[in-house]
Image (cartoon, rainbow, N blue to C red; front, side, top):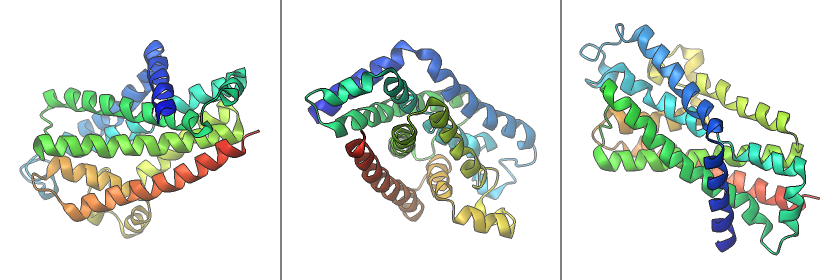
Length: 252
């Protein structure tokens, strides 16, 4: 844990020294919801649309900003730069746990996601978006999004360790976009076409989207919905950790 903490702090400082790497993390996730809200906010009005529960359509779109932002982590790109530059071999030769090299970056990605999620919620406040679950709901939302950031960053680092290529690692981040669009990100799942509803039901990101949406729109905690969202994160994290640990231990 001490090795992980030290390397995690190093990864955070690395991000602070390259703030330009955070621009896509904020701009692109904000772009789509703003465009979507501008196109259909007059169709889905808060006073006539049941699934909005009296809130504006911008609130429904907030998870569509938060999840992509959590899936644009830069840790894997910094890792593959170290692999290509040879510094990664020096880290492996150092008297530290190999696993901590990966876990340190995962730790830093979780910390960065907490800050970015809070920042994006703050940006949404002037547009009338509020977290219906209050302070507790906001805290749960931060944890959920941060855990997903750790999961997806772990996947990206796995690609980096296997490919050892910056191009392949960057291409790996594009996996999230098809998953994002096969979710109920415009309307609830029960209002999708039958084929799209079936596809979204098999998409794990759907349950994260619905869990985050319930915290934003519903003042009461929907435990079944939240349970599914956290279950997806837990299973994905267990698989990701197992594969990443194996990859770093077998790395030669």
